[in-house]
Length: 97
Length: 415
Image (cartoon, rainbow over all chains, first blue to last red; front, top):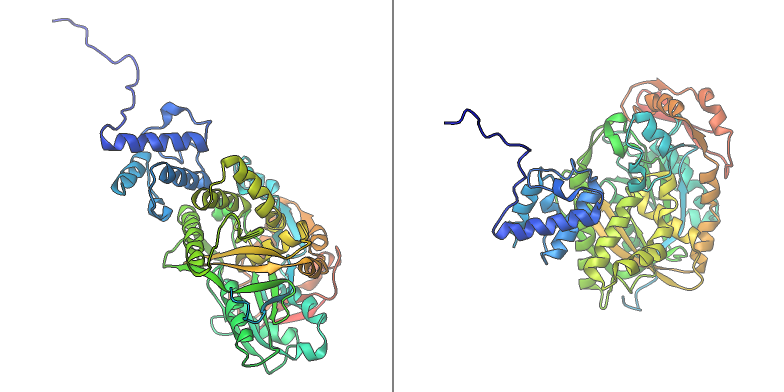
């Protein structure tokens, strides 16, 4: 048995959702990049919050508006206020599909 | 919109936005807030109250020039006075009771105060217009005054630079030179939420996301109700101008973007040009004053008319939103005479005449003005301390100043 143990050489890549939520996550990612193009794409993860990514309150409203249009959903934007993470936004959007 | 309905609406409009202002960049720097956010707020400066000003003086100072322009027999026909405010000075006694006295309005007048955050002035306008249109008292006039003061401090973060100080007075009657309301053309959307509130006389609470999202939903839903009531209503084509409640101009830009995406087929580029043409002129004054609460949509209307005077009759779409929440989308017609009537009030000149103060002076004033609504049995406001503000700038005549409180009775004097 080797005395060497396998250690990760870098931070693990953030996981992205698969299945039905993957399409919604992609729509959210596209909308965030459209509203705040300066955000590095790989920082948009389910665990991240839009506040952490530098989105102010108007940006957050713009993202929700865009993603609803992208997914062809007609839901009051008030349903999406106060969600802590992008993953929570994706889950709420998915419930309305 | 039936042709048979009598013309009713706003006969005259004036804005009073105080005697002092602070640059938003200085306020952000003084509070250690991110200066990059100024682009998002779309604010240049905001009005600042003085210790000798309060909701009563703001209301009187906004309305007096309108009444001074009336003949005595017209003044005698002011049969309804409503002050709309979220800056009440007493749980029972209204701001309107003081305003009624200092404006010298007739005793034969209904006097009352309305509260529904930033919406109440529009509710009062519509009820007043309904009274005038009812024909129960032909030729009657009503005075609706939206008046507020800022009580926010550093705790409010980015809401502090967005909060204004002042009043807008609307004379309502059957000779609506400023805005002839389209009869029956309105849409409503209201529901209970706690997005912002004033739970104590010196404390505002706000949930920015909840409030922004409620504003956007209410604009969409109240316009949908308007479109159900008004045949052929089209957000992109029906209105030559738009004047929206403006908590800060950046929100109005976002709201316009959302509405054009949902209700028109304009491309993003064309939507930008549409914003510049129909909306941007309404934001010039709000960018200089801050949020005037329920007067804000009428500050936006005055801004639109002063920035781009109309040369032919034009239809204006207006949107009023008040936290809590209540909202209304409605419309009216403005003409060249509307622009002349608002222009005679020299609003731009008086805004430019405000003294620009630095952050240190702002915080010195705020120490006193933040408690202007806190009930006290006795209080003295030393007018001499603020004399140099009263003597500065251009004044359209006498100003009412707050001099104190004696046995709970607020006292005032003409300066």
